[in-house]
Image (tube, rainbow, N blue to C red):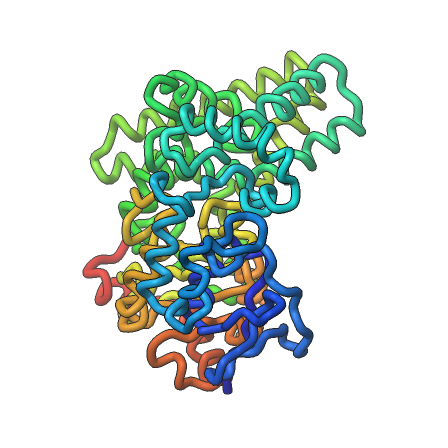
Length: 463
């Protein structure tokens, strides 16, 4: 029985190319996709047709719905679904010297869409902004990061200051909702920041250094905690037995186990992480973690006790609550499906999502396997790297999903709705011969808790 997949019209151009390559879904005359003989359907689980794709245009649109003339004939031939064509197209989208180069300027709209729908605004405002922004950001594709820094500078910071100056309940609630809307995109921008040690050009390095100390607490992050936990800890341990955020010792479709997982991180990460570094002989790093964590908490206590309690709750404490829970919900979804044969493999302990939310709004965070394979890989390089290694992903029995994000992945696993997850799978390699029921059962097995004996055997050590 085949999967029931479709090409979401809101996919990024890169995700569109990747998913089309994997499923061989062809665009129809009106721009929408239609399935070939591989059995993939152009609809949801109920058979409803999806809106036609109008913004992707085979990955080579010049913004007005027409292909670049020299390539139009080729792009309408079957070769456009080949790995070679997909890789070439993906690379051209990120290559500043290519005529198809397209920086990311905003997470909601692609440049080609703005160019096609609002040509005057594009010529007069967007194009000059892109030219200037490319001289400010470290990587030409990352105009969106400057866009968001300016957004936070003009909304989050003034709003927070106003709440401390004159608090109102309505403003407090609206501010918190605004920050909750921002936090996903911000966190994954900082994810790029901490791995690449900055997002702006070297001449603006002082801004790169300073702004996280201002904006991190506004989004719920304590100072430098994301860097120490994620870069210096999580990627070192890779969901192994010494990883404080490891899912190995939990039954991943168990609600009580999930609550224990979230609760431990929420209440004890400030202590667990320094102890981890002390245990590993990294005493200097342990002291830094304690200093920044306790310093951050002391600052919040001072603001709440002596400045403005209500403003502190809405500006800092509620965002802290949201992000601490959100990080663990997301990490659970990323590492809930772990192979029982080789749980130490990056291919088999994490997943890949070709979806809208994770990749459009969160800097290709869906390519989590690619990120673990190379934590320094730039976010725009994940799709092309995935296609280049597609055969290895298939050989290693990696898991690929579409039309689901990490939050929904966590929810569906806790609901034990493996049939839903099986329908979201993009089968690669031998997975293509499995029925939906067989895929669902395979996914169920991958949520099983590992015993200490199994951990010792698989990883050569216990905790």
